[in-house]
Amino acid sequence: MIRFLIISTSIAFFLISCKKKDPYANYNWHTIEVTATAYNSLSSQTDGDPHITAFGDSLVPGNHYIAVSRDLLKKGLSHNIPVKIEGLDSIYIVKDKMHYRWKNRIDIYMGLNVMAAKQWGRKKVTIAYGIPKKP
Image 1 (cartoon, rainbow, N blue to C red):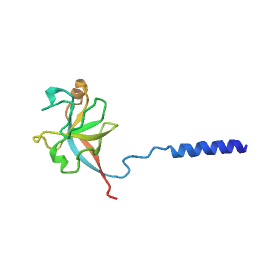
Image 2: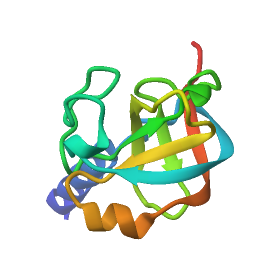
Image 3: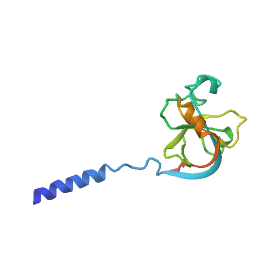
Image 4: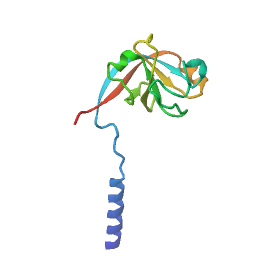
């Protein structure tokens, strides 16, 4: 019986200590409505290398990245900021910025899947973006 208690206590302690911490717990979240479109890693959709962002990051299909219009940079949606997009489950990271002509817009990176980008189309969505809390 004592052996059972020791083993079950050890297992319980192990499971509690392995609990994942929320990497975004120390963020203040803000919401805004934007127009959301989608883009791919294709030469026809970029001004330069289709795999390098305007921030100099590499785009890898399967990663959850977005580009933001430059007016949103001034609102806090800067490089590496996490973003939750209405209608999508994952958290996206700001890794690219759009041409100056676009305002109040995000562009969701969809790798090489042109059909998925076309199906997304253009829609108004609410996003939440996290700004790290100051210590």
